[in-house]
Image 1: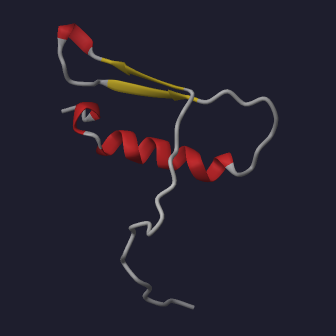
Image 2 (image 1 turned 120 degrees about the vertical axis):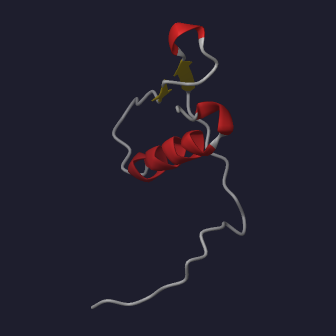
Length: 69
């Protein structure tokens, strides 16, 4: 089955997602981020994290300071 669904991607009640640590690497003294690393400490298997990890990455990628050009 193929169907068209709403293209709306906003959250009515946004949820806060906070990674344990985020590190940005800038090469050659540049202010532009070359690589960003999101660290999350896992003390046990948590399948819900599979859905939050992509949110961390897309949010970080969308921030102006995190865009590598």
